[in-house]
Length: 117
Ligand SMILES: [Zn+2]
Picture 1 (tube, protein in one colour):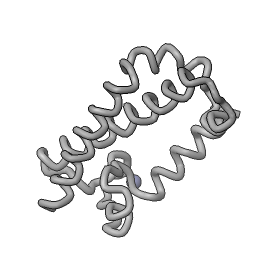
Picture 2 (cartoon, helix red, strand yellow):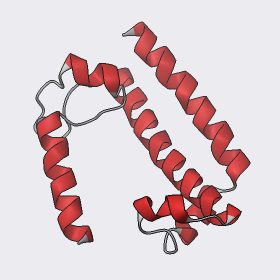
Picture 3 (cartoon, protein in one colour):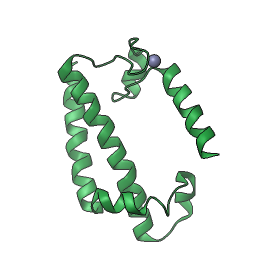
Picture 4 (cartoon, protein in one colour):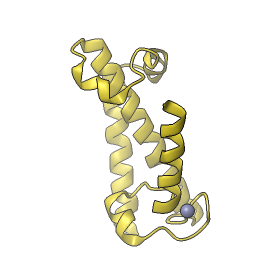
């Protein structure tokens, strides 16, 4: 567990630095209207739009990393937020900041896709 916490802390400071260099989080929130489709982002060439997408993505990652660190501190790390079952070790290895098990994450993403459609 020691190395996961260390990795997450490193990630958190790296994300904080890159978000600062891209502009404020609030800007990214305001610009989200323009960049609703994450898959359309690749076709955008305007620097501001690219920066907004990057800042948006990184602030989301930052929230995940921060939540994982809070879970480690409160002893809840590796427990699914939805069903309270332990998250598979293999999943945590790939996604150290995962807060949901595979089943709950897939369910959530399926619902998200339905909402977006
Ligand atoms: Zn679950």
